[in-house]
Each structure stands twice: as C-alpha cells, then as structure tokens.
Length: 448
Image (cartoon, rainbow, N blue to C red):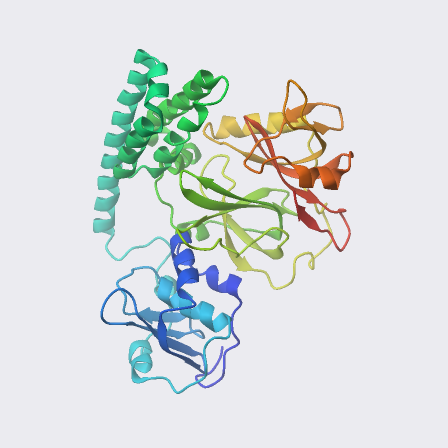
C-alpha cells in the first residue's frame, strides 16, 4: 500500500469503470471526466477537484486511492458517485497535475479508511426498514400496472387485432408509458416492439405471439412467490425490477480467460445499447456484457470486440441468464495460465443452433437472442427469399438484423463457409463477426 507521500500509479480506465455502482453511474462519469472541473490536482495517493454542477456551489471531491476512500459533497448515495469516478478517469488519462492539496481534502478524508462498500456487506442499506417499505410500494405499483395491461391485452384479443393496426404506434406507446409509470420498464420495452411488426408480412401471428408472451409474464408475476428462485428472478428481470451491480458482484464469479467475439450497437425504442458477447475459454460458456448509452453520450468501452482478459464475470440471477458484470482482473494476461481448452466456442450447424435456442426458451420464455458460432457462407437473395446463411450441410436460414446487406461478410467468406459469430432469434440470424484462425497466437476478430 502506498504511503501518504508516495505517488500512486494511475489506474487504467477499465479498472476505474469496474468500480461504478451501475451503468448509469459509469456513463455519467464518462461524460463528466473532461469538463466542468476546477482546482483539480493530485498529491501522493490523493486526488481532488471541484465540479461545477447545476447548483451555485461546486461539489468538493476528494479521493485516497491507497485506501479506496472517496468523498463528494453531492447528494448521491452511490459509492463512488459519478463525480468521484470522473475524477479517477481524469487521473487515468493523465489530466491531473501534482500540487499541494487544498484544506478541504484533508478535512474530508480524515478518519476515512475505506469506501462505504468496503465496510458494509454488498446489498446492505443504511435503513433496512425504509428499503423494505420502498420495495413493497414498488411491487404494489408494478402489480397494479400489470393488471391494467392484462385488461388491455384481453381487449385487443376480444375486439380483434385490426384495431391495433389502425391505432398504430400511438395506442401502444400510451400503454407502454403507463408501464413506465408503474415502474415496469421491462414490460414497456416489450410493448414497444409490437408496432414494428404491424407493417411486416404475417403480422397478426407475430403480434399475437408477442401479446401471448406479455400475458404469460403477467401470469408469472401474479405467482411470483410460488415460482422457483431462478425463474422468479427471470420474471423480475423482464418486468424491469432493478438489480444493483453490487448485488451481482456479490454473487460467485466465474474466473476464466474471456474473449470478446461479437459486438453490436442497437437503437431500440429510442434507447441506444451495446451488446458484447464473451466466450470463456475454460468454462466453455457464453456471457453478455450489456451497456446503455445516455443521450448525447458515448458507448461504454470497458470491453469491446477483440478484447481478451483474464478475470471473473459475475452473472445476473435468473434461468437462462447470460448477462454478466466484469469483476476483478486476474494477475496475468489472458491465456497465460495454461493452454487447455479450445480457444473458440464449438461450431454449431443450424439444427444444433435451433435446439440450443429451444432449450433457452424452455428456461426463459421471454428470451429473444442466443449467441452462436456457425460455420456458414452467405447466400445472396433469390426470388423467393432474402439474404441467407448456408451451413456445411446445405441448410439455410434467413439473415436478419439492422446491419443492412451483409457485404462485409460476403467479402470475407469469398464463397466459402467461415466461422461466423451471430445472434440467433426467431426471425433468423444476425451476423456479428468472423473469427480468425483458431489456436494461433494472433487470432484476429473482424466485424462482419
């Protein structure tokens, strides 16, 4: 541990961003790191600065990186708050000059030996009774909103889906807004996918399928206490109950050499997100690093396509859950511990991918996508079909997604079957990346 006058070595950005309590704090810190600061500096193991927010008085931020103690005069209850994270990012980027600390730094850090999270078990709150009351109030609001949704679904089925087609986006969006008010944002997201089906061929069957999924979610929420723990967690996730990053990190981690083999940026219902698919070389399992982009912000770069790192991932609770949080890094680079295990995921043919997706739906009926590695070649559109992928057995499936025509994949395949990382869904497959030669020291990932 560094002494009080020994200069601390700046942390890299991934280490800083892993401290964030949640995605919102991480994204806010990325926005704040470059502007709005006055009087910043560093000295020994301490960092400080004043951030001018919307109020008249700047926030005083003081950190001691040796003991991971951080304080800020902002009202946030997150530890570290977005201002502390932003100051750490500025330090990581070499933007803090060495000075003598102002008086407020010593005053705010005296007596502090660690962050709140280091002295309080993960998930513990200062006032358990008040927290329990908030949880109960939220559950009551959610239940009330879902009962309204149930009535609305019954009305659509009773009066016919043609009325839904005439109402269009506005009618569905009004119900989705009500779900947001009821603190069920996950349900609102599912609802807002419905209007996109109205202009497609065979839309009545597709819309009815989505309404059936929502109806099933309402029924499952009514029986939440009677469900198995994993399925109950899955239901809560799709409804939109929050799970804090600290609670996820408190779950057992899976330590491995993780390689980012696929990435896609999407905009859905005005919400931008980034999905990065990771493969654990030794655990032989998939993981999803999912982040959201705030309005006017930049995508999270903690993990991007092509990254390899040795460390632990902590998976969210729930049946069929692939989403995970990046935990602490291991002591060595990825691949340094041993050379056991194939470097890439096993290749699936289309029949195997369908079976895997069916297994996922059995565990999580509301799942929408599954990562797969297909050895396949792109097939240009014909009179009766659009772009397709053809596997080594000659079977084909449609290419879907928002990437347009897959000309980069065509250029890389050159008529041959190549290892394609893709997302499998009920609509088809969305190619994400083509893998380089497996088993070599220079496996290159190229976006498809």
